Each structure stands twice: as C-alpha cells, then as structure tokens.
Image (cartoon, rainbow, N blue to C red; front, side, top):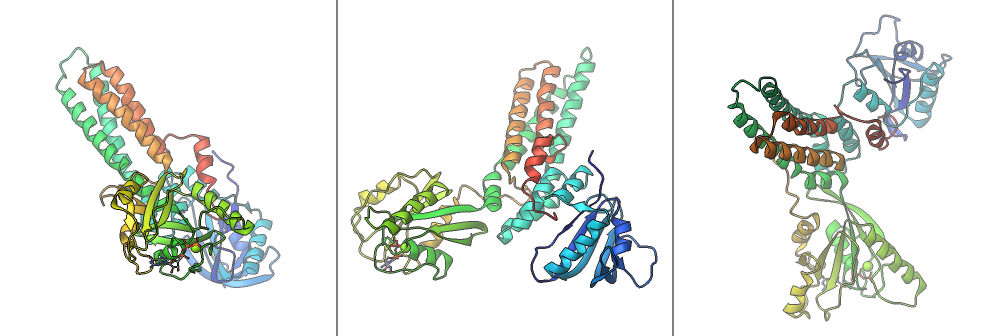
Length: 449
Ligand SMILES: Nc1nc2c(ncn2[C@@H]2O[C@H](COP(=O)(O)OP(=O)(O)OP(=O)(O)O)[C@@H](O)[C@H]2O)c(=O)[nH]1
Ligand SMILES: [Mg+2]
C-alpha cells in the first residue's frame, strides 16, 4: 500500500531541553539501532525494553549518552519496527544523531508520516489520526481532554455501535428480499425501531459539534469600537493582565494587539484594535484599517460602546456574530432604554464595567455562545467539519430509509439508503476513504508525528 522504506525524524521540538527524541520506523530500524546505539554488551535487543548506552554516528564517533528502545512490529505505534533514541535535548546533538541514522539507510519522514503509517497499518482510525494533531496543538486543558478522548477511540466506538446497528437492519432487509414469499412481516417493526434509534443517536452526536469545534478551533474575537470606549481596558480585564496601554486620550491604541486566553475551556484569541473614527493622522489611519481587517478575520466582533456618552451608531461588520459590550456602566448612563434595546438587533448585549470588572462572566458566556452546550459524558464530541458533514449525510440516508420503511417500500430500496448511511459513517473512521481525504488530513501534521 506504501513504499515500506525506513523513515526517521526528530520527534521533539528543536530547542535546548532535558530530552530529545529521534524516531525511526521501518525495516531498517533494528540494523540502524545496532550501529548508532552501543550497549555494554552486544546481546539481542529485546522488544519494548529501554536500554542505556552510547549514541554514535554512522562512523562510530561518539555523540551523546542516552536511552533507546526498539519496538518490533506489529506491536508498535506505526505497526512497523520502531526505534526511539532518547538523547539530551540539544539541537546540535539531535541533528548529528539524525544525520547518522539517515546515512545508514533511513530517509527523512514527511509531516505526519508516522501517523499515516499507523493508519495504513490499522493502528489508528481517521478520527484518532485527527485527534493526534488536536492533542499536540491543544491550548486549554478541556481541548486536550476532548482530543485525548477521541484518541482513545470513544468516537470510533460510538460510530462502530451505530454501524453494527445498521448492519443488523441491512441483514434483516436482505432476509426479506431473499424470503419475500414467506411471512416475515413482523421484522418491519424491528427495522423501524432500529432506524429510529440510529437516527436519534446521529442527531445527538451532531448536537455536540458546535462545542467540539469550539474546543478544537478556538474562537477569534476582535474588539472594536470608537476611541476611548474602553476596548483596551476590556482586553486587560478579560485577560486579568495589564497587557494594553490605557489612557484617557482617544486614539491610544494604534496597532492590533493579540493575546490568547481560556474562556471556560474554549481557547480564544482576543485582538484589541485602534478606535474607529475619521482622522487625518496617517499612523492612526493605518491602525484603523487593521482594525477592520481584524473584524473581517474574526469569528466574533466584540463591539464596545461607551454608556456614559450619547448613543453612537454601530457600523456594519462582516463577522459571523457581533456581541455588544455596553461599557462604563459604573458611570451615569447616557443611553435611553429604547436605544439600549435597539442594540439587541445587532447581537446579544452585556452591560460591563472594565474599570470595576463587572459583567465579565456574562460577557464571556455570550462570546463563546451558550447554544454550544457541553456534550454529555456518554456522547463523544464531533470536532471537524469532515466528521460533521459525513454524519449529516448519514442522517439524511437514515431518514430516507425510515420514511421508505414506513411506506412499506420494497426492502431492496430501503437497503440502498441503509448502505449509503453505512458508507457515510464509514467515511468518518476511514473504513471507507479516498486519497484526497487522507492528504487533506495529513497536511496539517508537523514533522516527527
Ligand atoms: N469609569 C470607567 N472608565 C473606564 C472604563 N473602561 C475604560 N475606562 C476609561 O476610559 C478611558 C479609555 O480607555 P481605553 O481602554 O484606553 O479605551 P480604548 O477604547 O482602548 O481607546 P483607544 O485605544 O484610544 O481607541 C480610560 O481613561 C479608561 O480608564 C469603565 O468601565 N468605567
Ligand atoms: Mg485602546
């Protein structure tokens, strides 16, 4: 299925650190181990045993002292012979050690190639492959927990159970086709009931996508508003950090300031921007252009309005969602109720004081959007559009099959929709897949994974 050559890469980030790991996978892993890792005795390498020894290059020159483990196939991450060499986390040592390994017949691994081999050898399914990148990149504990859950196969098991149910339905329909003369009419109710259960389960899991996606992708929030509205103060308040300069002078912020934060487990990136106004000052004008750009590339625009000044219109934004913060509510409010109510037409409104830190929890809640409820423990979350789209198609097929069963359509025809549903669910785990899908998924990987 693929060229079974031997691949190698540095698997840890390149920078000074306690330990750095070189990973080698393929048939030459063991011969390479014997050349570049010198143990006290030249005895047999036991599989899955950590040895201490000297790391040398292809010519035998000493590089470092460290540990090595050989994991013989098929009981390894990739399903091939895998060698891991643990040396000191020095970029120079790691480069020298890798070079030795490459000189002895391995070639540099492409991004994600170890995981791809694990998939091709049936060690991981596609949802687990996706979870590997998600776990490596997770920015909050909740994102990491979600990815770990998927990596451990929770989603795969849920989908496997759905498939098993549908296979049962299909078998029953086929029995009806084969024995159409005999009386097996009672099976119809079983088919309906099973299709109904599968449909409910798919609907439940589709409901997890909004939050699953949020935890995986995070949320880009651009803070916009007129000069002096309190955008930078609000950024600082949301970060609990004096990150941006705050002054009573309008036009203080000139450039976009980006910071990461964790809103109830959702990784967010907040961008504070220059206040929107027409000005002759060229520097500020550039800043305002950047503010508009930040708004275009954000998932949510957080528009900050100053409650202590007479109402000002909110400009139109292209963003998917707008949340309004009516700031400075510690001061006398200059907004008539009617004006405050009309804000709701633009998006949900939070009354806040960046100065006294009030209303911030409510604002965070509105920003991450409460419609994205946390999933129930028993139901794994969908995290990618690929998974969501395939299951949405599966749901359509199951609905069609259920409708056809109600109308007592010929079992052959119902079976076609049931098979389509099986194929769509199979696409999620990769039981049914195409080269394009694989390429798209592995394109996101870094080298050494
Ligand atoms: N009373 C009160 N003052 C506030 C509040 N938030 C901000 N301010 C004050 O408003 C002024 C402007 O605050 P900034 O955070 O710099 O406003 P900005 O929107 O970033 O302004 P530009 O960067 O110039 O666009 C400062 O003097 C802040 O102390 C608030 O909630 N209540
Ligand atoms: Mg500012």
